[in-house]
Length: 460
Image 1 (cartoon, helix red, strand yellow):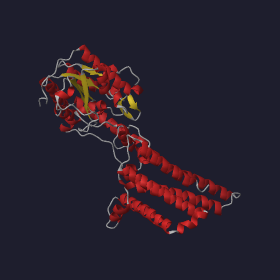
Image 2 (cartoon, helix red, strand yellow):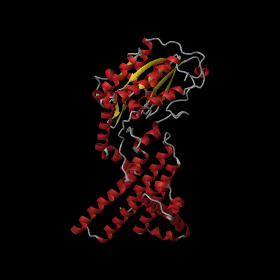
Image 3 (cartoon, rainbow, N blue to C red):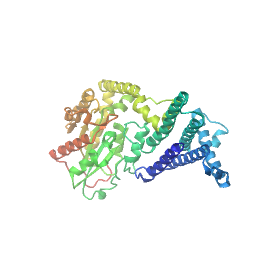
Image 4 (cartoon, rainbow, N blue to C red):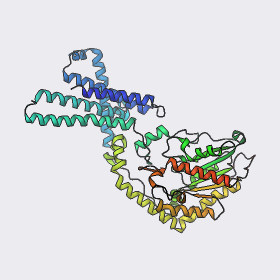
């Protein structure tokens, strides 16, 4: 049926508009508005093309001035998207093309609308050509119809798949370069306070605590709850529920933070905490190792035109980071683990990291805060990194600090239950609940001394 591509285009447009309009955690931004505008424009042009090719009786109405004006505007939008696509693909500017792109190009939303329009137009044209110029009784006609049917299926499927991955698919992948992971962050990475941290606003004065003790959970992506959709399932939030009235728990953690970053954030608090729960992950040594001269491998980004396609297309981006770069990223991960082993065994790097950790202990002592340390190995490589977290645990235990070694606590658990998913090795909800329970037990077994009742800002 010639109108099948038009029907698919209309359904895609309607679903995109409904999904972007009613998904509260991911409201429509200028970027999404441009995408929807390009999508609607592409669907409209596709409809005009289909109507023209199929010889509908209402085709004569296209000659009216209003219809001609609409056609000109939509054509300008599509040409603007095509110009922008060519400009972006060439990776270099042009004297006349850049102003044209700025005038009529709406980022890659118009380009996506262009793809949808071309797909629908080609599908409709292929169906019309098959019906008019082939005979279903001849074998060449049958073969040609099978080929066209496959082509139409691909032309309809690819824009629909791109639409799905662009507006609806969201999954944590532990990789900020993955667009599906960014979709997940837009939906679930909230609330964000004025410090840019995934937490409620922190108290500014002792009066804001209403007599409660302040507990600061400090760390990186593990403590921030990477991969956890609901912050209520995060270890710090669970700890607040377990401690109950009389305590206020805040989360001082952000993905990518290392020990110096965490210490700076702790020092920047306007109210000195009574309890500090310090979360440590093996890669927290990277800053000390880098200062010692060690270089760290990073995820390899695709470059050139292929890189532009991976960067802009949600479908291609997902396929690349899920399977295309699997081997190379596995090698990079193996190199990182090897460097971690070297860093913890290298006296210079370990001494600098130990000095950073000693500053944490010194800060809590000067501010009268109790310290509890939670050390994590890499949960997707528990046997290979357990010794690294044990080295940090021994450092704090030798100084009389209560330590929770998650490598020892989780040694007998099923590895599949420890991580968010097969593509995200951050702690699962079960591990967050386990960590919160262990910290709560450590705090109740060892009564916390009262913190500074009058101090507002902590000592530097």
